Each structure stands twice: as structure tokens, then as C-alpha cells.
Image 1 (cartoon, rainbow, N blue to C red):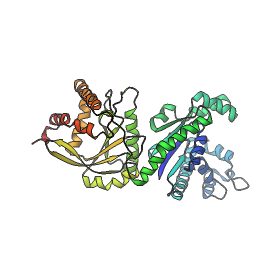
Image 2: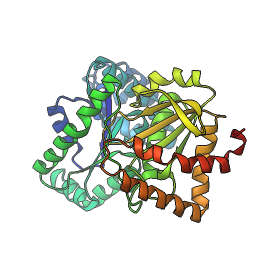
Image 3: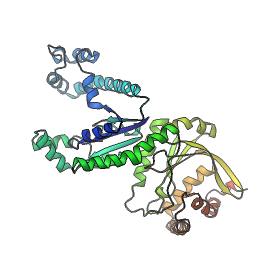
Image 4: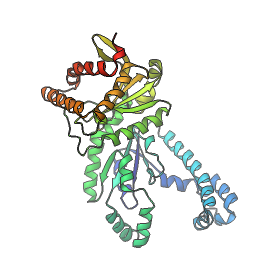
Length: 386
């Protein structure tokens, strides 16, 4: 199952995108609907709310009197905390039931207005943000919902900022124009990314890679991408294992392929193999691999890569005391602090990328750098050479 988080600020038109995705066969789990479900007449949560806030919160017909509950629950911070302590577990459990009910679905979209505010994004393979400029959202709230400007501005201000959403969401869907334009954008996203991702995830296979191309680092958000991936991996496998952003995209100002290299450190390779199923479920299938240390020396590791065709990732799973692990960290630190070596490496990368331009895979490009890496390993991990 490909799990997608869908969010957007109030007035952004998130429901429009949700409906489009449903039209392509995605199962939609609506957080707002679930919040209404758990307080419907006859639900056990109503008894808990009445016990805490008084019988007046239940109307004569057995339904929740929302005005009475709001008056009682938002009277002070303690009451608000008590309301959240009752509501959140009920919503969480009901959401789990919905996901379990659709466990056989290929794509499930969790529509959550406060996805970012509640720090939920690491739980999903992909997070989609429906994006509209704040001023246009204000206009929509006033015209479509009849809000005053002050009320609309207040509601927008209570939500996450655009910058906070951009930092944790993987895909930005511009919904500022005509509905037809949004439909086209979502159609492209479904065909090019969502459906292939779901198929790769089910088959536990890696997405195909394109030709070698070095990108100018200006305007790239590689560190932000790496942090999003690391947060998802930590959510899936726990925080007991160290994860680092390594490789060229971890070095400010260095041209690089659009591939995020990460290093996961484990006590030993048996532990690495035990994590393989979890990593594949998270979208990173893998197999046994080796690091070429030079002069005929090979060191075992696990190598995992992305099922998501829209986000290239190399995940190197190494023993924490391995030569490869020590070198990977040391090399990034060197390039970040030594401008001359960074310039030298950049020149080498450009020459080799030009030489291997158009190659279907980057293996030849990577192999061509091995002699340089051997020199660097002698400098950074001299004890690894007898």
C-alpha cells in the first residue's frame, strides 16, 4: 500500500485534489469525516465527553451539541487539553481501522488539514501539499464561505506557514488557477509518479534511473529533501540507528547528480538484513553490496534504493565501525571545510560526467571516480591500509 498524506491551508481547495485522486482509484480517508464519526450519536466517546464536560454537551436527540462542548472545552487550557486527550485517541484508533479496512488497496490518501501542524508527515510515503497564495485563499474564504477578512486572516494565521509546509511536503500542487489546470497537474502526478511508485512498492523493486547529469547546486533543496527522507526512515525503523546525509548533495555549493545519498549505521550486517523488509515497505528495497576500498579490498554492506520514481535515493547500510562508514562521514566533512579539495573534486566530477554523458546508468561514472577515492581513503582512513 502506498500511503499518501494530503494537506493544504484553509481555502486552498484540498477537497478538489482529493476528489481528483479518488477518480483515479485512490482510497480517500478523510480526517474531518472521522472526527465527525467518533462523536456521532451512539458513539462511546459521547459518554466520555459528557462525563468530563457535563450532560449539556449532549443534545436531546443524542447527538453532540457542538456549541455547548466548545463553550466548556475552550474555557481554559486545562479543559482544552482534556478535550484533546479524549478526541485524539478516538480519532487515531478509528483512522487505524480505516487503513486496516483498505489494507489491500494500492493507493490510500489520508486527507488531513493539520498534517503539518501535528507533525504527521513522516508516516507517509508521499506528502502532497495543495498550494494557493494566502491572498487568494483569503478571497476564497470570504466569497465562498462568507467569512469576514479578520476571521479568515485569523484562521490562516493559526495554521502552519507556507515555509513550514514546503519543508516537509514532497509534492506541491498549484491550485491557484482553473480546476482543469489542477486536474492536468494531478493526472501527470498520478501517471508519472503515484502509480509507478505503488507498483514498485508492491513488487519491492527500485525505480529506474536516468542518464548521468550534474546539476548546479543553486536553487536545489537537497538538505531539505534529505531531512524529509531521514524523518520517514526514523519513523519506520526507529531512532536507535544513526542516519546521515552523505555524498555530494550534502556539500554546500557542490554540483551533484540529483540523488540523495544517505548512510544508515547498524551494529552489524545481520542487523542490516533484518531491517530489509521494513526498508522495502518504506520504499527502499535492497540487496547485499560491497564498498570498493581499492587495491583489491572489498567491504560488505547493504545497498538500498528508491521505489519512488520522483525521488532518487541511495541508502548505504553499513556497520558502524566499517571503513566505508568512517570514510563517507570524513569525506563530506573534508569537502565542507577544504575549499581547494572541493574545487578539485568538482572539476573531476564535471570531466567524468561529460565523458559518460548519456549513459543509461551511472555505474561507469561511479567506477571512474574510484582512483580518486582510493587516494582520499589513504588520507582519511590510513589505518585501513596494511
